Image (tube, rainbow over all chains, first blue to last red; front, top):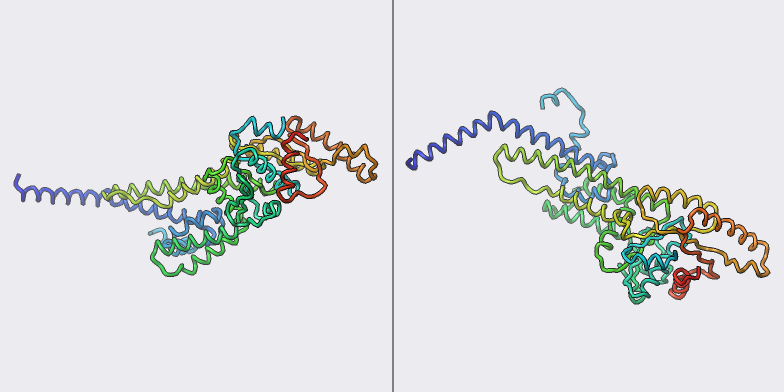
Length: 91
Length: 326
């Protein structure tokens, strides 16, 4: 096979892989990430619950985890405290 | 079996604890045992896990928050300053947040949380509990003598450990599951390795620390736990209850030491009715103690004519405790 043929073949293969990922894998990956995201929030709830007034993990140790979740705190609070509505079903 | 016999027969028991109701002589016995072991050529650290510690008073030296202070040859004493420990810890957390996110100032909401958490009632106990791990894992000393908190607190301390442990086990499980989902997503996207989960590592370290601290309290091989009692009804009843609870938490009980026994020889002398009544009362309770605890009673320590403070008195106490004068 010549060089050009080889790269063409590669292009086709990549496109096929991409399509296959789009058809099957993407949804699964998205689902996995979404699940992980929900769990992340659950995790913050059970470790940093005090922030919402729900004391759960011994505070001495929850402080140790605090630095890692600083960026998530604001979105997490919003998520935990907001009321459920119809649009949640679409999310 | 005598108290000295326990130490001679079980040299592997390197963690020594005296427990009992408040004010019965736990600190005195801790100090005296430390003194005796140091005299026998062992390097000993006696330290207090009580936020209201009194080792400074008994050694007549201000050792509060100063680390392990050498009191005599081979004898070291330490009082943990819980407040100082908490402040340092808070600063560490703040610094880590600043470093991790390149901030100049900890966000207000986060800082409020850090401050509020420090005011939690369990904070002092947790801080001391956590500090004990560093002290004990250091392994610098032949013997570690815990000057324990009064019974109620000690039980809290133990139950806290088992609850912490279980809870952190659960959280760690959740975190691991999260990691798996992240890996699935990465594989689907045909990405590279996932980043190491720092939180998981932190949780595992917390679990390790809690297990180490509580593990020592319940280590049958390396730990000797002594109950301090006095011949009085309430104390006997409370100790019985506590012994049951301690057994539930698998604390290895090595025996009982009876403190504040009025010397029975006094009965031969011409003594006032008040003292005679107390002697009679104690005789009854001492019999009850012997029936209840039998050969687990290791020593009877007489009531001294003065309080035990300073090395001279500690030495006298050690002689009585270990010299077979019981």
